[in-house]
Amino acid sequence: MLREEDIAARIATEGESLALVMLGNTNYYTGQYFDMKSISASAHAVGAKVGFDCAHGAGNQDLQLHDSGCDFAVWCNYKYLNSGPGGLGGAFVHERHLNNPDLARLEGWWGHNKETRFLMRDDFEPIPTAEAWQLSNPPILAMGAVWASLKIFDEVGMPALREKADKLTGYLEYLVNSLGDDVVNIITPSDPKARGSQLSIQVRNADKSLYERITAAGVIADWREPDVIRVAPTALYNSYSDVYSFYSILRDNIKTV
Ligand SMILES: Cc1ncc(COP(=O)(O)O)c(C=O)c1O
Picture 1 (cartoon, rainbow, N blue to C red):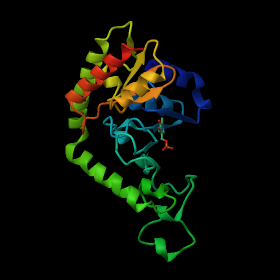
Picture 2: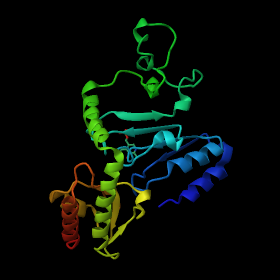
Picture 3: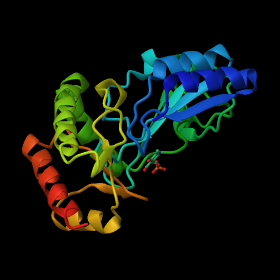
Picture 4: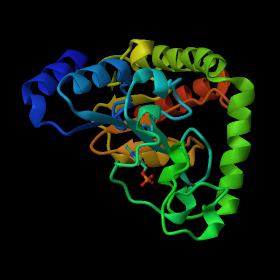
């Protein structure tokens, strides 16, 4: 686990030699969630720009990217946002960077003002949103999957999803911890404010065959070497009984390790 005060101290030590602070807002391995607002403030205090890789945060936490003050964020939609493998990515650019003609960036025709895009003028007139960063037109079928998924997220709302997700992950944590410290060690923070849905469970003396056995028993989780199972009950479609099933399958298979 990284301590946020250590991140802040390191940014201050590097000082104005830093051009960019770029961090995963939710660490892919541990599931630790970082306070983007305070990291953004530390980065800006030394004159650096700050960006977040929200691959494990988008659709998981209520990110409030604008209020975090970060300069930009990027994410894939194929984890919590259900776009399917190979789906489109997403990007956020803070509004203070919009309409800045001096900003050096890679520009493509799809980022040009939609009203005048086909006039084929020599100049580039950026769309006054993050759309200005689009290079070319996106694949429509892949967009359809993201569109359908985002409509459901909009309908339910992140606050309601987080409320359920905290309960599901808390229940999972309680069950997994009941296996005992000599068997498992959850490396994700136990503070719900410092995590999302994911728990990373280190299983003592385990190898990948444990993951293979729980997969064969119907669990869709993830294995990270040397000994970590990452699992994330998802509020939109996982239930408390799914969490209990995972726990019992894990428990039964650990016994045979
Ligand atoms: C930390 C992190 N960043 C980004 C990505 C997604 O990368 P890409 O959008 O290139 O598929 C992943 C996917 O596993 C990831 O774990």
